[in-house]
Each structure stands twice: as structure tokens, then as C-alpha cells.
Image (cartoon, rainbow, N blue to C red):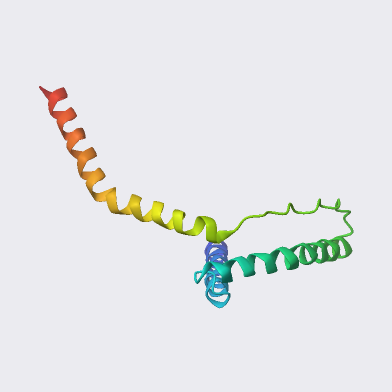
Length: 118
């Protein structure tokens, strides 16, 4: 009985995290224009390090453990607009040729098997 409860709890936690991630992406409009995505990334770079520091301080206070100070996160000068379209074009190109490549590879495999059986 206990393993079922743990399995259910793990499923609920994973589902909650996945649902939260989907909601966050939708709420922050990360799948919209690249300007908005870049603004969200900059906002995250400003908010996440202090939040992680506060969390580590809280864990230290509650557990009595000493955690080493984490180094500052690196600064990236990365613009989504420069690479977004090329990434989308690459993915769409790969998806568009996938059926013909699958047919070609299966035909080559079939011919190889026919030669081996003879």
C-alpha cells in the first residue's frame, strides 16, 4: 500500500511542476515575440540570484548547515532575435524532410536485408 501512495505522490508532484511550468510559459508570454522573451530572461537574471541566496540562507537557518557562497552567475550577451528564426527554420526543415528520410532509410534497410538473406 505504501509504494502506491509514494507513486501517487511523485506523480502529483511531477504533474504540479509540469503544470506550473506550462502556466509560467503562458503567463510570461515566452512563446510570443522574441522581444518579450528577451525581457523575461533579463528579468529572471535580476530576480533568480537573490531568490537563490534567500533560499540558501533559509535552509542554513532551518538545518544549521553551512553552505558555501555560490559564485555570481555569468552575464550573457545573447539576443534571442538573432538566433530565434534560424533555430525555428532548422527545426522545421528537419521535420519536413523526416518522412522522406525515414522512407529512404527503411528502403535501404530492406534492400540490405534482402541481400543478406540471399
